[in-house]
Length: 239
Image: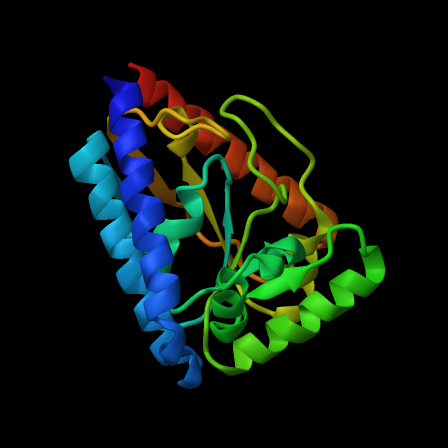
């Protein structure tokens, strides 16, 4: 049954996405605000498909740590493709730090550029960090939130990869708080997994890490908070 529901969802999701990418091309003539609003509509319908076809919903807790009165950098654990969708609905037109390869996807790459996402060459090292920071400063001037996945890629539940320098660079240069965000999405929509499982994904916004820490202290604090919270959310979901 899970396989059939997942198949139906994939048909609905990719069909809907293709229709949006084609029919929405005129939207690209407008500013990023209009394009972003159009993208949020795509996300809402996609998550609705996930709920009614698969039975997979989500809840967000700790929303009091999401301060709508000031900008922030959101450092989010990345376990699933689901993570790339939902946060467009919770934050202030967040500019995602994304791998540069996504810009080359037919049509989709145009939308990423028009909505002001921040591409990064994961092999570019120092030069790539400089370009990322320059783009991030521009998004900050627009009053937008920034979103980054500290490990740089999806990591299965229970596994751990080194946190990449991008999040520390944003923290050190932008003078913005970093809000860690834990989740357990990988339990239901796994990395490169065809089947999606019914249930409820939990997203937890954690207290902000204020500017001023050293790079080493910041990275240790971020990793400790995120990993501990993700382990707890996974254990609670399994129980």
